Amino acid sequence: MTDPLARRRVPLALAAVVALNLPLGTVYAFSVFIRPLEDGLGLSRAALSFVFGLAILGFTLGMNCGPLLYRLASAPWLLAGSATLAALGIVLAATAEGIVQLALGYGALFGFGGGIAYVVLLQGMNLMLTGRRGLANGFIVSLYPLGAMIGAPIFGWALSAHGLRATLGGLAVTLAAAGLAAALLAAASGMRMAAPAGAVAGPPVARQLSLFLRIWLVFFLAAAAGLTVLGQAAGMVEAYGGTKALALSATTAITGCIAAARVGGGWLADRVAAPLVMVGAHGLALSADALLVLFPGPLLAVATLAMIGTGYGLVSGSVAAAIGIYWGAEHYGRLAGRLYAAWCVAAITLPVVAGRVFDLTGGYAAVIMIAAAGNLLGLLVAGSLPRRVPG
Image 1 (spheres, helix red, strand yellow):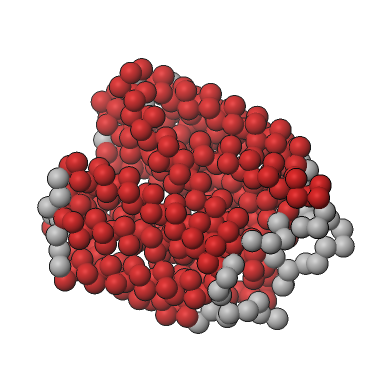
Image 2 (tube, rainbow, N blue to C red):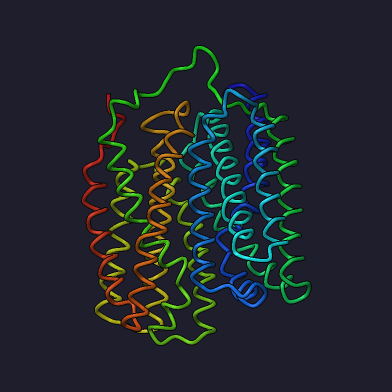
């Protein structure tokens, strides 16, 4: 950016993104609450899986509804409102006595509010960027797993020291404070939801349906494998003969790999064509699938699951960059919401199949073979994407 004032405002906007996305990212640490919720509310594992799935669905709906609010309120008010909605959802969850209130609070309100906040921050941040867009977007999408990495040990300590309801109450307070901070930072940065008059529009979205569908499929196939690993890493390592200690360590390490790979995927997309990053990412995951099928074992399971997660992270980061490359900042939030539907569908497909396969066979070999087929298809589809912005 050539405007010194604009250069000073970008760090303020980025601080708003960090402040709110880190606590919202604790949705990835939901597994920490499973045992306390089972014991405290008498809920089954299937019921809690439904609550988590509802949160993912709510997040996706929030991302797609958020762009409809751009002209109704400014970025600071949208951030304050969505964070308040998410915090109220956690308050409901903290006071829940059964599945209905828990699903409404954690699943619907927390997820929906988080989705709106996420897309508002993405849109506002991208309208302020003129360079290193890939790196910035890779960093933004890395904040959710980073939030889970930070939140999980804090939740573990709080659950032991203060119990379930107090821990969720603390999360609600944190969300409210983060929402206020993000709103103030967004106001100070001058964050807006629409490009200024006279700005150059991106390529027409209507003419790029084939491109969108291919990127959607590439993202879905990577996310299906990656979310399976992210959600079931501990169980998968144990199924391949690992100890509980190794399984827990692997879960933390894999989450860290995904977060780092999201930043790396965006950074690489600034330097080489985004489709090449996606091809390499699916190729990395495919090689990991093959290794685990041919040489099953606990230590190799940790390494290969980390590779699969890294492949997912690289695709996630490069897809975030590709939205700006192919469609421009003006359409960023709207396209991101539509593409994240792939993430939602991925969360309720292969991870669910993986659980069912394990129940039937006691292992994950068939799941890894399905993931391999998906990564191979993702590699081929990514290879068909244009290297430059279509005319």
